[in-house]
Amino acid sequence: MILSNVEIQKALDDGRLMIKPEPLPRLPQLDEAMGEVKCAYDTTSVDLTLGDEIAVLEPQGSPMSIDFRHGKFAPLSDRFSKSFKITPEQPFSLERGRFVLGKTHEWVDLPIVKDGRTCLMARVEGKSSFARCGMLVHFTAPTIHAGYGGTITLEIIHHGPFPILLYPRMRICQLVVEEVAGVPFEKKSQFHEQTRPGGQKG
Image (cartoon, rainbow, N blue to C red; front, side, top):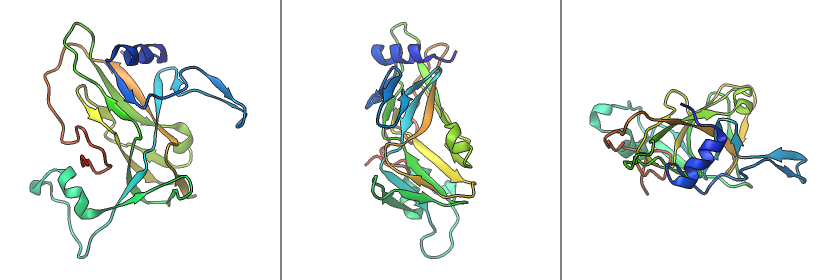
């Protein structure tokens, strides 16, 4: 069952879902400077924002292939990616056909609770404004499993005709939260507690 915005906020209050910093405002508020109503919660999702690091996959030196028989992605990623810090004054210009890794500014926890409360899992989805410009966010791997804790890596590729500027704290994706039937046993992912787009923990 997908949680409504009211139930997502209840889950934040009772600790079944943790998002730090918490997305705000919880209720629609008029931003007089922008002349629009703002709220971090849609009826069945909560918005997350872009962190301040973009990783670009680039071959280093001679041509190479990624061979997962030699290890998982997280420890390999530094070998074939270059990271950029972005700021409001210096955003990243995402050109047509470019693929990058970003991360959420927010740290998300979906703890496995064993006290009779229902566990939660989530899916990360893009936002329609970006989709209509040709930008895909977090494609093919949207599932955030119960038990996960960390920032969320965003696999971003742009197919539209115009460059899109990526800057920190822009609302770039939405988290759809669902209930899990039963209590799962714990299985930590290689990306658990990641803090960087490539899955690294530091």
